[in-house]
Length: 203
Image 1 (cartoon, helix red, strand yellow):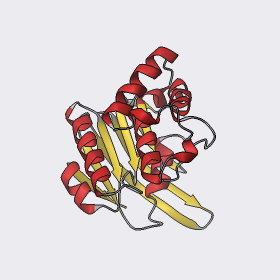
Image 2 (cartoon, one colour; image 1 turned 30 degrees about the vertical axis):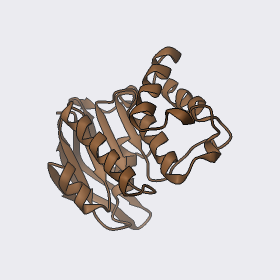
Image 3 (cartoon, one colour; image 1 turned 90 degrees about the vertical axis):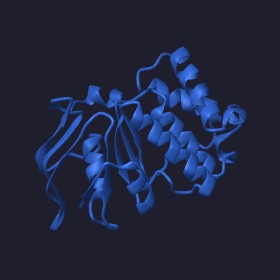
Image 4 (cartoon, one colour; image 1 turned 30 degrees about the horizontal axis):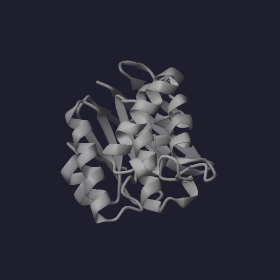
Protein backbone atom coordinates (compact mmCIF):
# COMPACT_ATOMS: atom_id res chain seq x y z
CA UNK A 1 0.00 0.00 0.00
CA UNK A 2 1.52 3.32 -1.08
CA UNK A 3 -0.78 5.76 0.70
CA UNK A 4 -3.13 5.46 3.67
CA UNK A 5 -5.33 8.37 4.72
CA UNK A 6 -6.38 7.61 8.29
CA UNK A 7 -9.21 9.57 9.93
CA UNK A 8 -8.16 13.02 8.67
CA UNK A 9 -10.10 16.04 9.92
CA UNK A 10 -9.43 19.71 9.23
CA UNK A 11 -11.24 22.94 10.11
CA UNK A 12 -10.54 26.58 9.36
CA UNK A 13 -11.97 28.51 12.26
CA UNK A 14 -15.56 27.37 12.71
CA UNK A 15 -15.74 25.92 9.19
CA UNK A 16 -15.22 22.15 9.23
CA UNK A 17 -13.69 21.23 5.86
CA UNK A 18 -12.79 17.56 6.36
CA UNK A 19 -14.32 15.13 8.85
CA UNK A 20 -12.84 11.70 9.58
CA UNK A 21 -11.62 11.00 6.03
CA UNK A 22 -10.04 7.58 5.41
CA UNK A 23 -9.05 5.72 2.24
CA UNK A 24 -6.06 3.93 0.69
CA UNK A 25 -4.25 3.95 -2.64
CA UNK A 26 -2.05 1.11 -3.84
CA UNK A 27 0.51 0.79 -6.63
CA UNK A 28 -1.12 0.77 -10.05
CA UNK A 29 -4.40 1.99 -8.61
CA UNK A 30 -6.21 5.27 -9.31
CA UNK A 31 -8.67 6.88 -6.91
CA UNK A 32 -10.99 9.72 -7.95
CA UNK A 33 -11.78 12.39 -5.38
CA UNK A 34 -15.27 13.71 -6.07
CA UNK A 35 -17.18 16.59 -4.56
CA UNK A 36 -18.30 20.12 -5.25
CA UNK A 37 -16.34 23.32 -4.81
CA UNK A 38 -15.56 23.86 -1.14
CA UNK A 39 -15.94 20.20 -0.19
CA UNK A 40 -12.29 19.90 0.84
CA UNK A 41 -10.64 18.12 -2.08
CA UNK A 42 -7.79 20.61 -2.46
CA UNK A 43 -7.37 20.86 1.31
CA UNK A 44 -6.92 17.09 1.51
CA UNK A 45 -4.36 17.11 -1.30
CA UNK A 46 -2.43 19.86 0.48
CA UNK A 47 -2.40 17.76 3.64
CA UNK A 48 -1.05 14.78 1.71
CA UNK A 49 1.75 16.95 0.30
CA UNK A 50 2.51 18.51 3.71
CA UNK A 51 1.47 21.99 2.66
CA UNK A 52 -1.13 21.85 5.45
CA UNK A 53 -1.26 19.93 8.70
CA UNK A 54 -4.42 18.05 9.70
CA UNK A 55 -6.18 18.80 12.98
CA UNK A 56 -6.38 15.07 13.61
CA UNK A 57 -5.60 11.83 11.82
CA UNK A 58 -2.50 10.76 9.93
CA UNK A 59 -1.06 10.19 6.46
CA UNK A 60 1.03 7.05 5.94
CA UNK A 61 3.34 6.63 2.95
CA UNK A 62 4.60 3.13 2.20
CA UNK A 63 3.60 2.06 5.72
CA UNK A 64 5.21 4.87 7.73
CA UNK A 65 4.11 8.38 8.73
CA UNK A 66 4.66 10.71 5.79
CA UNK A 67 7.83 12.81 6.18
CA UNK A 68 9.39 15.56 4.08
CA UNK A 69 11.80 13.20 2.33
CA UNK A 70 8.88 11.15 0.98
CA UNK A 71 7.87 14.10 -1.21
CA UNK A 72 10.69 13.13 -3.58
CA UNK A 73 8.52 10.15 -4.52
CA UNK A 74 5.34 12.17 -5.03
CA UNK A 75 4.32 14.20 -8.07
CA UNK A 76 1.79 16.96 -7.38
CA UNK A 77 -0.04 18.99 -9.98
CA UNK A 78 -1.96 21.68 -8.05
CA UNK A 79 -5.09 23.37 -9.35
CA UNK A 80 -3.45 26.77 -8.88
CA UNK A 81 -0.65 26.82 -11.42
CA UNK A 82 2.65 28.42 -10.51
CA UNK A 83 5.25 29.10 -13.20
CA UNK A 84 7.97 31.74 -13.49
CA UNK A 85 6.84 33.66 -16.55
CA UNK A 86 10.23 35.16 -17.39
CA UNK A 87 12.16 31.88 -17.30
CA UNK A 88 12.64 29.80 -20.41
CA UNK A 89 10.59 26.64 -20.58
CA UNK A 90 13.51 24.21 -20.36
CA UNK A 91 15.16 26.21 -17.60
CA UNK A 92 11.90 26.15 -15.64
CA UNK A 93 11.62 22.37 -15.99
CA UNK A 94 15.21 21.79 -14.88
CA UNK A 95 14.83 24.09 -11.87
CA UNK A 96 11.73 22.28 -10.63
CA UNK A 97 13.16 18.81 -11.23
CA UNK A 98 16.39 19.68 -9.41
CA UNK A 99 14.20 20.47 -6.39
CA UNK A 100 13.09 16.82 -6.53
CA UNK A 101 16.69 15.66 -6.09
CA UNK A 102 17.65 14.93 -9.71
CA UNK A 103 21.09 15.84 -10.99
CA UNK A 104 21.18 18.33 -13.86
CA UNK A 105 21.88 15.53 -16.34
CA UNK A 106 19.06 13.37 -14.96
CA UNK A 107 16.68 16.33 -14.98
CA UNK A 108 17.47 17.30 -18.55
CA UNK A 109 17.22 13.73 -19.88
CA UNK A 110 13.88 13.19 -18.13
CA UNK A 111 12.46 16.58 -19.10
CA UNK A 112 13.44 16.27 -22.76
CA UNK A 113 11.92 12.79 -22.91
CA UNK A 114 8.61 14.02 -21.53
CA UNK A 115 8.69 17.14 -23.71
CA UNK A 116 8.89 14.86 -26.74
CA UNK A 117 6.08 12.65 -25.43
CA UNK A 118 3.83 15.68 -24.89
CA UNK A 119 4.72 17.40 -28.19
CA UNK A 120 6.60 20.27 -26.53
CA UNK A 121 10.15 19.66 -27.73
CA UNK A 122 10.23 22.84 -29.85
CA UNK A 123 9.36 25.00 -26.82
CA UNK A 124 12.50 24.29 -24.77
CA UNK A 125 14.16 27.69 -25.33
CA UNK A 126 11.04 29.86 -25.43
CA UNK A 127 9.93 32.01 -22.49
CA UNK A 128 7.17 30.61 -20.29
CA UNK A 129 5.07 33.74 -20.84
CA UNK A 130 4.68 32.76 -24.51
CA UNK A 131 2.92 29.51 -23.63
CA UNK A 132 -0.83 29.16 -23.98
CA UNK A 133 -2.75 27.95 -20.94
CA UNK A 134 -2.86 24.47 -22.44
CA UNK A 135 0.89 24.40 -23.07
CA UNK A 136 1.54 25.63 -19.53
CA UNK A 137 -0.54 22.68 -18.36
CA UNK A 138 1.57 20.29 -20.41
CA UNK A 139 4.75 21.80 -18.95
CA UNK A 140 3.54 21.39 -15.39
CA UNK A 141 2.39 17.83 -16.05
CA UNK A 142 5.80 17.00 -17.53
CA UNK A 143 7.54 18.35 -14.43
CA UNK A 144 5.08 16.51 -12.20
CA UNK A 145 5.91 13.09 -13.69
CA UNK A 146 9.47 13.38 -15.01
CA UNK A 147 11.09 12.25 -11.74
CA UNK A 148 9.10 8.96 -11.91
CA UNK A 149 7.02 9.42 -8.75
CA UNK A 150 5.48 6.44 -7.00
CA UNK A 151 2.40 8.53 -6.19
CA UNK A 152 0.89 11.05 -8.59
CA UNK A 153 -1.58 13.64 -7.27
CA UNK A 154 -3.53 15.53 -9.93
CA UNK A 155 -5.85 18.41 -9.04
CA UNK A 156 -7.99 19.33 -12.08
CA UNK A 157 -5.31 18.22 -14.58
CA UNK A 158 -7.51 18.79 -17.66
CA UNK A 159 -8.12 22.47 -16.94
CA UNK A 160 -7.15 24.66 -19.90
CA UNK A 161 -6.73 21.77 -22.34
CA UNK A 162 -8.65 21.37 -25.57
CA UNK A 163 -10.23 18.01 -26.40
CA UNK A 164 -7.10 16.66 -28.10
CA UNK A 165 -4.86 17.79 -25.25
CA UNK A 166 -7.15 16.28 -22.64
CA UNK A 167 -7.27 12.98 -24.50
CA UNK A 168 -3.47 12.88 -24.74
CA UNK A 169 -3.19 13.56 -21.01
CA UNK A 170 -5.72 10.85 -20.19
CA UNK A 171 -3.66 8.39 -22.23
CA UNK A 172 -0.47 9.34 -20.39
CA UNK A 173 -2.15 9.01 -16.98
CA UNK A 174 -3.50 5.59 -17.97
CA UNK A 175 -0.02 4.50 -19.09
CA UNK A 176 1.55 5.61 -15.80
CA UNK A 177 -1.11 3.71 -13.88
CA UNK A 178 -0.40 0.60 -15.97
CA UNK A 179 3.30 0.98 -15.10
CA UNK A 180 2.47 0.84 -11.38
CA UNK A 181 2.11 4.48 -10.38
CA UNK A 182 -0.48 5.16 -7.67
CA UNK A 183 -2.76 8.04 -8.66
CA UNK A 184 -5.14 10.40 -6.88
CA UNK A 185 -7.29 12.33 -9.35
CA UNK A 186 -9.44 15.29 -8.37
CA UNK A 187 -11.49 16.41 -11.36
CA UNK A 188 -14.86 17.73 -12.47
CA UNK A 189 -14.45 15.57 -15.59
CA UNK A 190 -16.61 12.64 -14.49
CA UNK A 191 -16.01 10.72 -17.71
CA UNK A 192 -12.23 10.89 -17.23
CA UNK A 193 -12.65 9.76 -13.63
CA UNK A 194 -14.79 6.82 -14.75
CA UNK A 195 -12.32 5.86 -17.49
CA UNK A 196 -9.16 6.14 -15.39
CA UNK A 197 -10.05 5.31 -11.80
CA UNK A 198 -10.60 2.02 -9.99
CA UNK A 199 -12.62 3.58 -7.18
CA UNK A 200 -14.05 6.89 -6.11
CA UNK A 201 -14.15 8.69 -2.79
CA UNK A 202 -16.82 11.31 -2.21
CA UNK A 203 -16.03 14.23 0.06
